[in-house]
Length: 386
Image (cartoon, rainbow, N blue to C red; front, side):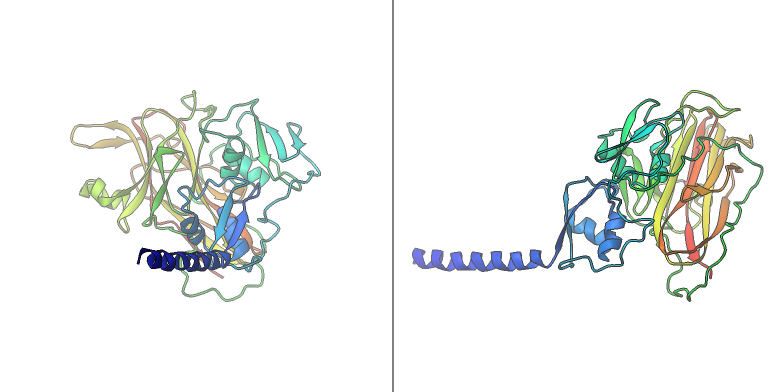
């Protein structure tokens, strides 16, 4: 009897293994290349980022490593999705036609010598390489801390490296962002069923830890912090400090503050730091078709000069205590001042002439030491208007 049982088990296991192999063969294995990101891979294969994350049990969607293998679920054979446009295609390591004097071509990309005012965010824009790829290529443990003179490998760079944007831009007295000036193209009809093209634009969805437990970033978004010298004048000097980032719900705030910090829904993003200047950016890479678009960014500057017993506070009235600029690829708007202690917003309109990936979001900074340099971000929206 025992022999019969064993005889039955063996072919059953064999059949299960064959079925499992058949299932695996229905998927495609992608070897991560320098310059790859989940966003680019999802476009290449026509598979959602969430599907790739779940198939590979990825903890941090912004950190993948060149040479590792990814299962692309539901794709059998070559990529079937829309080909990547030139602006976002995974670059191959070829010699750029022109490079800054402080960058040289190496086998795996470009070796960039960090200059004063550089940050991983600015390098990512300049070389069109994901921040996570630069972090992985250089084994960086603190993405907010790079220093002048340090050499960084920028993996997979091809073509001309663009000029780095200025480290600081003088603030202006404008209160709204200017409209982009590109000529509008001939436009197809917008999808009436899609009202917000940002993934998790209302921040009501899930979140992930980025590098540190105090950096809790909403799913679909990327975060960059500046921990370099605070050279702004006027300013408190020293270095910018890394703020804490939290996705908070109404259950974590007094009900009297809900109208301030969470005007819609149940959650918002809280960014804060006491007694130190801060500078950070929150942004998302979105694949857009030709058309005209409007981005609306809502936020509450919780910039506090002094706290009192019972939770009351005096908001900082200095017009330079908080500033914001819109991110649009490697451009956007100038820095503009905000009003602490009340809801603020920025509305930015732009045109897309050719389908491709577009980086959108905002940068925030506090140049002074104060009781709290805080920001609540809620209900960001990207919509097609023509």
